Image (tube, rainbow, N blue to C red; front, side):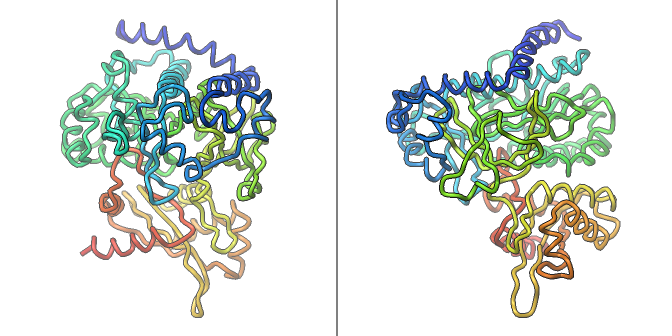
Length: 509
């Protein structure tokens, strides 16, 4: 290992002791975060309105402060966007993360404070390296560059003194010099707004670098890596980057992509895969044990206070939220956060399950608005991704992207689900894939199984296998390339299905 590698490894590993501390004392850690947040925001407009100065306990907080979503908090966010100070958080807000708006058709602007950047997003990045090095003490990850695939930045349309952009772009622009030295491509390329231009330049630069790691959303990383293989004529990426050792992924479930990475891109056991939970609203989780696939350590000292709404409470007018000490294992919860950027009892839109306590580990199970429940089947993203993975294993398929939605009943047909799937390797037979998909859903979702019995309400799913590039070009048509943009996996209506089916008919011509 290089001297730089030794020095950075030493400083990063010092953080392990503090991580161990919150593993042992999770509830005390969260209570300290809660008290700090309430105290700092007590003189903000929001704090005054809801009596933060009188709050002495979590129960006071839950009684006085409402649970909100983006739409209900937007009037305050709009004031911040326009430059009004001390609305939600006391320090100036100079950056806003522009979310892809996967829960509705509009983009969302999430305030990002200096405290959030430093003690949440950057701290999460350092802890990701800390936990990886703790498991891999002989790592040479700092001997080469790390490729990070990000979005772009624009001037805030409400206030030209501040910036908006993907959280990845905000993080890259503000990185400390040592971190910027270790990443590629240069900022002038990484922050390009035109995705196609960015791809061309990234391929040119990165194929010549000594790369040891990549951090990115699997969806867009696949597009880049496939093009690098095509341009270089190599059979796999280890021929280009022989010392490559780590792919850090987030934003979407990696399981459907795992075989593509392990067999096509990096066919070697030297390459590790590590999941993170870094959203526009904050950095919440890091995989601390590479053997626990899909599970992440909930990071408890990042200026974020967590609450969890049981799914049976979610749609009530005043849902009951649980604190960390009240949660149960293997149960779905909607995630609620209060943060050092001024989000108060904010429903982020994700659902999680706890897989362990002491330490508290979670897995992302879906989105609160991404599901299919047109017939009482309550199909969530976790179900869909599990079924897709097992259908791939049974038929030799490698899936790159998919979306699904309902087929509505009418006088001539029963209901069902319609799937549009893009593969880099197609299944041995489409019928076997469809049958395994259906059988798996029936095994893991009792509501789905009940509706499928005797074709009572649901018929066998309808599956379209589309040519490679379909989803990429569809997302391009929608202005959703790159960055934090994600293909909508499930929808309870046919908005995405019908738009994509119409696009498919034009794309194939």
